[in-house]
Length: 157
Image (cartoon, rainbow, N blue to C red; front, side):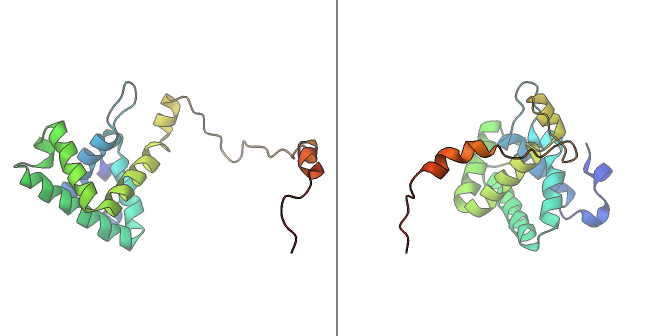
């Protein structure tokens, strides 16, 4: 899925190069595994860009973090996309050690987008229940009886 197809120009904050880099990075964080696609190929970069667009602090964090990835990759002699998988992992480890806040936010956003994707949920056998389909059932009060019969375990003041 191309970014231009689902994100209006007014919501784009990453350059095309940054978006391509983010896609490559996401493919290393969650690589393809059997029937499960990699996060970058699934289009999670668009999910992250939307989240980052809504938060100026995240915008700065991601812009600086992506720049650090470019710098670390160039110190390894190449563009990130042209590095071997092992070299990409080393670049990401370096960025993680130098900017843990960015990297942990990146991983969290990657997982948020990936594990809320309907295709991924379906592939792993999870069926999401819509709020309209969920019926709240009253609690079975008898389950509370053992607790109610216990002596208090706290000190009254």
